[in-house]
Image: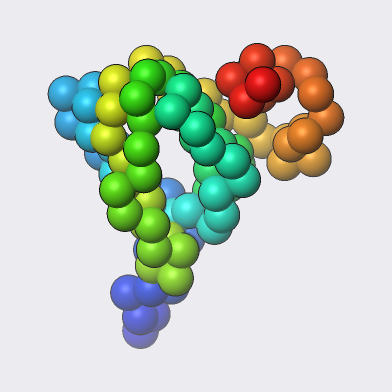
Amino acid sequence: MENLSNIAMTNHHFELISRSELRVYGVNDVHSFNDEGILLESTMGLLTVGGNNLRITKLNLEQGEVCLRGEINTLVYNDNISSVGNGRGLMSKLFR
């Protein structure tokens, strides 16, 4: 039987509550963040969360969990992890 931390790392899902609170599970790393965008590496690829006044309220990478609050406007997946930091596309616009 798998323990709960292994399940959290492989089972990627999220809960969005009233576009003001987001709980993301299956997160491996946080690549960057500011009050307008957060770039997470999940077990299903890169996830960019865009919005305003974003702040991380809980970070537990051992359990694969990230919680955040703020005005959440976009959730965008990108399978290409090597695109982090290449200066092109949505990522470079969010994290200038």
